[in-house]
Length: 321
Picture 1 (tube, rainbow, N blue to C red):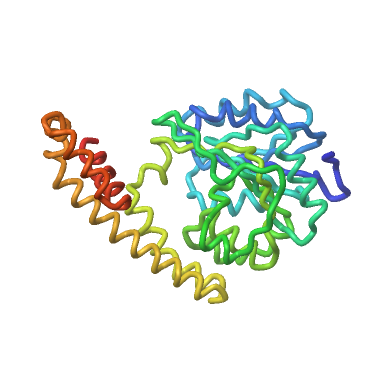
Picture 2 (cartoon, rainbow, N blue to C red):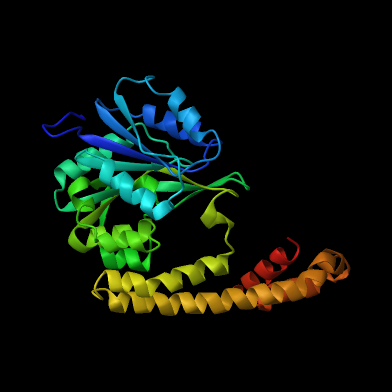
């Protein structure tokens, strides 16, 4: 049950938007779809959208009496980090759930389960859920991790090694945990990963294994548009600032991640270079294979190491893209 406490609403939902007119209807419907009692504070942090995102949101105001709409100034673009800073500050609930305007929730019990979890595990300042990654251009859904019906606990070090949470839309925070975030976190480029690492510095993270959210990858997304190597380089470049932000407590963990990222950058860069070289051959490869004796193809498949085969497939597949 969601109820009002003495100081304000029990739950705040932070809806973060920027030019999401194509997706915002689905996001809002997934909010109203939730099985919970009000009042619930719905904070809309729009970062200066130039499309009809805010108009669509306003059309839904008053549709469900459980939700009290609260708009932050959306007349200017302040950037994603500052937008989250003001959004978190504006939420007055005991718990703060986040939904980005191009994502959506798929379980009507998501918020209830997360509230119940935080009620029962006071040592956690964050409860996240399993989720599907939806690649819009391929119309494919991929589960982030194995589906279960239980929960597990995640530490900051585990999150540094593998950002299993992956996006803000899976998260519900204890407001008191958000208030412990170092102010400097909003002066650098901060995504969900470092916010959650800082949260986990003082508490455990609860992770519900049932998938209840969808993280959408689409061509309009700033992160999705970047080439894979550029994503790796950006992550690598942020690590020194993140290590400083966490006062070098996780220095060894960040160093291990840096080494892993450097290796992946080299590997991906080589594959990209080879793919560019192979592009002309990749286009005629099917014709070559048509004339190749079957025995040669069979021997090639059986003799090539699996890792090398996978690399060749990746290279030639990208070559014809």
